[in-house]
Length: 222
Image (cartoon, rainbow, N blue to C red; front, side, top):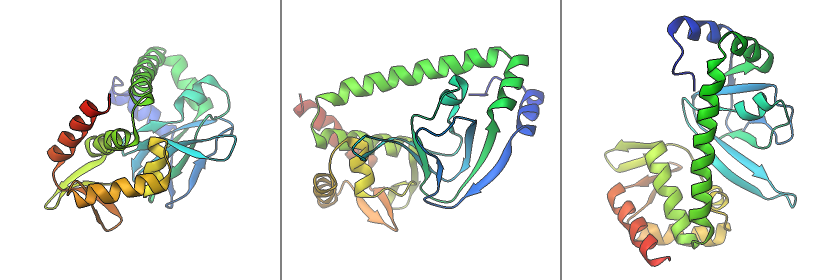
């Protein structure tokens, strides 16, 4: 979101940040915490999730290197509406709200850049909600797996490895289903050769085959 800054401006902004390291499975902030900073992920991955009143978590997004998060609630000045937890060891930059406000006062167009990014994010989210609302679990799971391959995939000799370590429970949270249903589907996808487990990661031997399966399910699930 800071891509329009020149080197001098980036240097000024970086000087205001604090570099921090977090072990795996560490919560960066909880839902309803004060929004006092934004973060930029330098290495590792993390999950963004919401907890419902009955205590169930729903994963909304998987963060990767280069992603910023926590900025919307920070700019709004209200409490966090999501929680963020590391999936593996992570290194991050933390920018305090008071320092960002002082910087934005001198570079007001940065706020317009953020507004544009927020609008695009909301548009995509609305499209996803409308698309997934009336779809069955197989479609939703293949949709999520396809996105993970696109956004978090790393090519190798055995296929495309999803770099984030996600359990069946994590995937169930992402698609709004239960672990048993998603576990059975993952087993079926493995039998069909669409997926395999390797060292705690999911590997897609042939991303094109996964995409074809997704497109076929999309045609059937209407």
